[in-house]
Amino acid sequence: MSSFKIFDIAGSALSAQSLRLNTVASNLANADAISGTADGAYKARLPMFKAAMEAGGNGTPGVQVLGVVESQAPADKRYEPGHPLADADGYVFAPNVNVVEEMVNMISASRSYQSSVEVMNTAKELASRTLSLGR
Amino acid sequence: MANLDPIFGIHADAMNVQRRRMEVLSANIANADTPGFQARDVDFAAALSSAAKGATSGTTAGAAMRTLSTDPRHIPLTLNNIGGLNDGSQLAYRMASQPSVDGNTVDVQVEQAKFADAALHYQASLQFADGRIRGLMTAITGQ
Image (cartoon, rainbow over all chains, first blue to last red; front, side, top):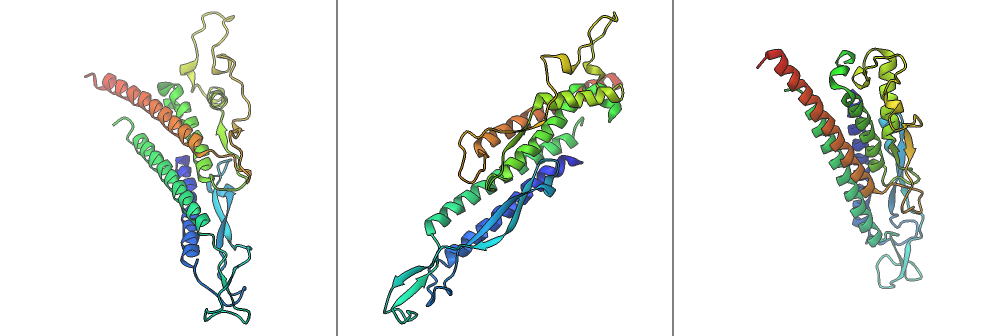
């Protein structure tokens, strides 16, 4: 019965959005992790989404997470000579995490998650009504 | 199910099309954050007409929509010649009202509204089918 395709599609969206929420949590948690070198600083993680044809098939794609990439933005260089991790010139390196951006990402992910849950609820209700047809 | 089609009339086809439409719309909502994704929708009129055509060409199914012709010159009334329904591509791309930089054309509010619309139409057809069954049950049991 192909009416369960909706659950595949919405389910793929739920897992993709929850992975996005995970990366946001990880980025926010590490937003203040100072490092002594530019390479050692935490880099913001970003999920990459792609429409996945196999979830629904026949022109109704679900969401596929291609992978999690690290942001290529340079680490935030701060002059703090008193910091124990400061290098010879007195600089420390903060992660390239933009906290405001992450909060926006979090709201967007949670709204998209909610939309897909609503879609699933509606589909579930219609399916159960169809099953009880004529009773 | 084919022999039940005349009982349910057009509603069996309509439910199929609305279910398909809900699939497409749920894919749009699922891909609201996918870069480059183009929102799509089912052309309901074209889809329903091709669904009904498939049914009539096969068996006697879909007969509920056929009119009684008492003269060979009568033009049969089918879904294809009511109001000029054209049979084109069933999945069309939606024009974005507010295009975004990443090429995504999904407007979640629009998709949610259309999804609610499709769900309501599905429910309406379901109600008609249910009423049909109840009528038949009354006829069978004679109460």
